[in-house]
Image 1 (spheres, rainbow, N blue to C red):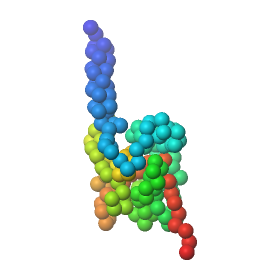
Image 2 (image 1 turned 180 degrees about the horizontal axis):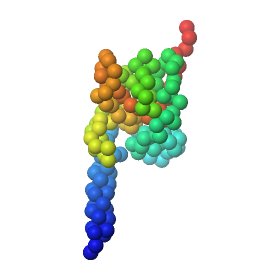
Image 3 (image 1 turned 90 degrees about the vertical axis):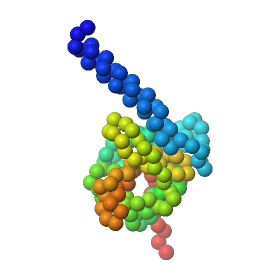
Image 4 (image 1 turned 30 degrees about the vertical axis):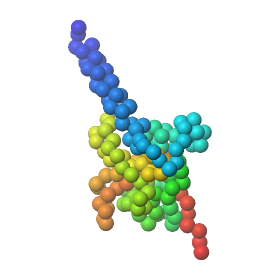
Length: 164
């Protein structure tokens, strides 16, 4: 057995281990009962391919691809899966990461879970009503919270405040 086969075999074992870990955590990150519950076929019918990949399969959109990253109007950002308001525009800031970022969610709108993946251990943020994956939260945000809720724009919809 030569070194190349040993390296390839080791890589396969690592990839297999990661696949087992991912399969046990990935779709199940936000496992449980939710107010909004649909079959996989219903989610596929209701969501775009990109929304389904992020919200239901814990994917990540390409940085800089969401127009919501530059959304500056007053309003609310809602879960694209169930329309639950999850962030307010007053809590949005430009993190320079290419994803819409917020200092805090609307109270009671999101839940978190541990995400163990190729990028290490992170804190996943998901919609508390439908369990849809929204993004991750990091401890490198601005005051007052010091948090950066880094969200996938495709997982959100923006609802502007109506002028009075």
